[in-house]
Image (cartoon, rainbow, N blue to C red; front, top):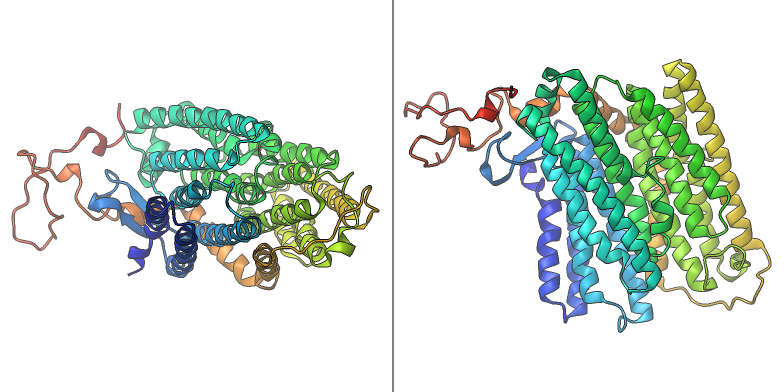
Length: 541
């Protein structure tokens, strides 16, 4: 039963996108379809979190056995990511729905927006669930195509320019990823992650290091790790608020997820950890210094997004149970908080007509609810006790102290300084936007209930992470154990005989016909002798 749930986070949004596109003249039907699909994805995600807690759940797509066929794998980490991303996608869509109802959809390309949003959701789920490196590349490309459409919605000059920068950078990342894929297949004869985990240790160590670096560069661009993060602050702020929110909250975490998956499963020998620790430190410091210097709140949040990616890279590079546990917890926290803040900024822009802190002011008197909606996640982002941001950072700093090296202590100091500067930047924005006397009169206006409701739903979820920190940390710890052990993932995908459940080309007899299924051991029916394919016999010479 639980196996049937695994493909749904990918299939449901794709089916919904097709249906929404077919009903492009019926906006109401498109809205209903999108909400139902995203809600169903959330329900499926919760089911996967429960089901995957007892072990990875694997589905061989099309009945083709791994490693020949593509597999989808729901382990603790991927199930958690699917659930959180579905919740965020649903809340952001409800926010955009409230905005569309309040403003009218006459000038907005709504017929394109709904199916594109669902395609984006499918790409995110595919990236989290795939057990195949090439399918991960496909997931990234789906994300790229959908995100470019969403980023340029409205067709203004600034959005087209920002979208162009985003696409060029993403294409560079994709090209590097594709080169790495080709080299990996040439060296090992497979792109199945579980089989790669077995074969990569058998190839030349220098070649393995080159492959690892290429993947880190490709994923580092998508995750916005310094010095590969310069594109982000110029690309995100020009998009509509819901688009910026989902991009900032989710898309960079897809890159972080890819780094976690490949570093723990494919390259557990820790040879690049020192480089990643330095990159994490620079990402934190450079990002937060950029945030402090900003006078536009969207750009300020974009720079804090970069700086807090550094915390996650810090935890990955620690390569310890404590570091990885804290990273999984921090990713969940940061997706929620960062998305919420961008939604709040969209409401602030709606009232004040600008995101420039020099031109905003007095919003606390005009919209006190908005002041609360900003203050809570902002303090959470800064890591004020006892909120979830504080708990995640304490876990990461604890991991740094346990490392016990000068670089580890430097990262701890850098993490504390970054947290203090985040607090400074956030308080500066809070004071200017909500408490200073506005340079020009800002007229009070009623905020759409749909936009406020979706924002406060995410504020509440962010707060709930604090109250549920114990169970969530336990779950993150079990996810980290599975990642570090590696064998539960490999055994679940490949099984005891080195292949998944289903039929593959290895079982195709000489006449070219495909056998309906793998014959059980006690079956007296003679099974034709399979002719092993070159890629199934081990590492290629």
